[in-house]
Length: 154
Image (cartoon, rainbow, N blue to C red; front, side, top):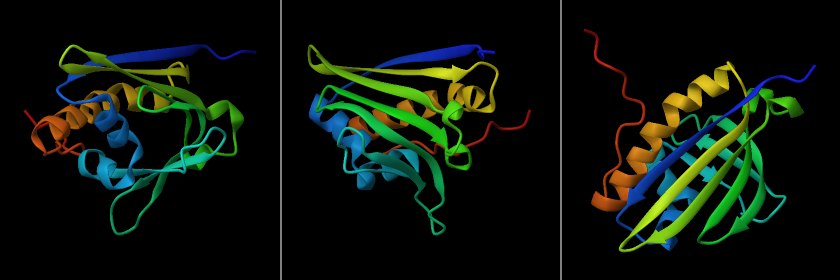
């Protein structure tokens, strides 16, 4: 039986260059500033990538492989929770498309091949908006957002 799949699409506009946006996604020392994690890889097709929490414990959070890379306009990776790395069905795919748009950049992030109603689908539907907002803030102001913030109790 095939499980139902879902996808999410996010688009944001950033006052930056394609090179800086691409670098912000792929350089660990930059991702930690707005994401609180480091994306670690040699960024070659077929290579592994790891998403590591940028704290004292340096916990491995996510894993995957680089599917496609065309700096500074496109990156495609597979994506799974580190705890589910051995299950091929747990992997989804993230595509980053970066294009010049007059004096700014349009960043389109498509996260697809997600199992519908899964914990991962729920998590990324909440996580990507804050991460991409933090990326935009970081590139435009030099300061990312607190991506670990929680809503205030009413």
